[in-house]
Length: 371
Image 1 (cartoon, rainbow, N blue to C red):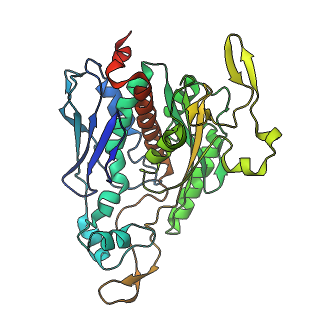
Image 2 (image 1 turned 120 degrees about the vertical axis):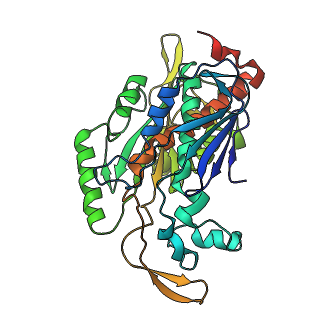
């Protein structure tokens, strides 16, 4: 299936980029949880185009209409269904793409899989537009995690090779994560952010695009959460993160750099911090054997450059079975990384709350209601 995720906090995303609406159904949220709907909308607004020329000109209100599951701001135990209307669409921009698949898009693969019946407008169900309902689900998940003292936050680690500072793998805090969320561009070092913006605008002027890396942290998750082998934290988080279009890679802790280290260089030794067992360093990214160690969970996700660029590109005509040229029209982000930060947070939150509920037991989630 292309839409369902989770075992306890289960989400189903529906709709296409240019359909009448998109949305999400969340099953498994305990009854009696008061949700801050204004906070949910504020979180979703972080995914909206930021202006300044570094994102798409498409404007969508992304106001979630709650159809079920929440009464007077309190969950009632029924599945939560939220619908988001699509308004600012220009479907005519995509009419020729049924015959001329865009390089590095799902157009060709989807045409083969669905025998040409796929919705080509705006990328259909393969569009980044579907991350809007993901962000709604993630915002709900984060409010549940907050009740347990767990915070999820991310920043732009790099764009086009221009790097921000990394989170401190041992001492990254809730306060730092929340501070980054308040910024227009989610970076730790504002000077690096200015250079990133300049590079995005420079590449956009050339009709091109750039990609980047997002670093995410989960703080406050106690040790012992997660499952071994196939249902570990890495497995479940990775599955959620790869549900974001344009993600091409993920690494936890030291990640690929670990392959170049000695064991003595990579190992995180255990030490006592008062009555608590911690590690002196955190190259394991807070996960051992698929299970949380109590240290901050850290991972990075790599995003490809936006494939819709203004330059002329080679493609093929599916109807004529011959080589062809294509110039992509429409409104597209020269870099999706700034808008993807809350999407990464949302996907991580959905995966973590699902694992946490699994550990506690779905019917034993009254702990969420404790003040």
